[in-house]
Length: 219
Image 1 (cartoon, rainbow, N blue to C red):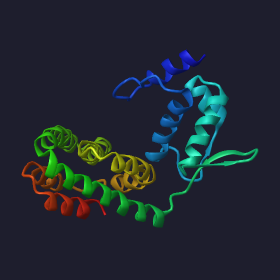
Image 2: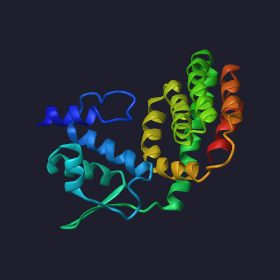
Image 3: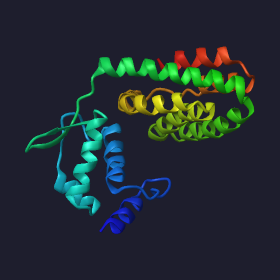
Image 4: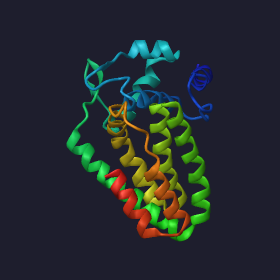
């Protein structure tokens, strides 16, 4: 059953690559987390276990384990005898978390600009190209994804494990609010100028400029 379930989840459409072998509850949590992040499962909505289990061809046991994972992340609330519901977004908490996330990304940007500007510029340039292509298509969903990857890449390339770990935790809290804000910007122009400035600051080994631009863009 687990092998079949893993194959089924890995083959779901819309993913860039198959899911690496991981515990089944973690895979299910990934699937539900993405739907919560992107407002497919909305705040206050009940997660109907049997419906989800049927759609993924999994049993309810790993699904319930997945829901417990999401509860520890503050994304769902499990109610005794009533199942799980999506937690409403706390705007104040999300705003505070965005400031922390911006600070971590800015610190990572300054480290990257000081220590590995060439490697950073090369990797970020590829991500920026995906941003430009999404803008040209008017694809705000892919624009958002590429933008988050851009900042995530900065954190990864900086190579500070403490920053990486903290950024991962805080991004779980922030992602949904950033996505909703991005989608509500429909009709506005796609602006790559800020990304260009960050890239140039890193390429030219200007840590202070990189840090300042990231804080201004992400706070």
